[in-house]
Length: 76
Image (cartoon, rainbow, N blue to C red; front, side, top):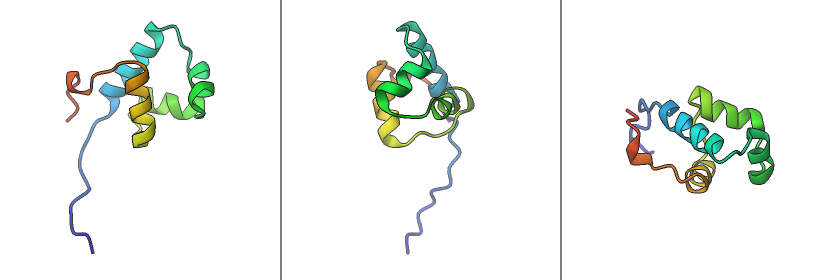
């Protein structure tokens, strides 16, 4: 059995807000983005505004698509 501690405190909100800001700066609505990447707009809202953890696939899509640097945001 895996005994590693996977229970860590990680606040995703700063990155979610950075993704939202970058998306808006490019003039892309949440609904447009949802259609492009095939995700529910409500899920994207939760990632951007509520700090919900995205899947690694979605996370990589968003930071790549909007050129968001993860090391610029203090997320501890």
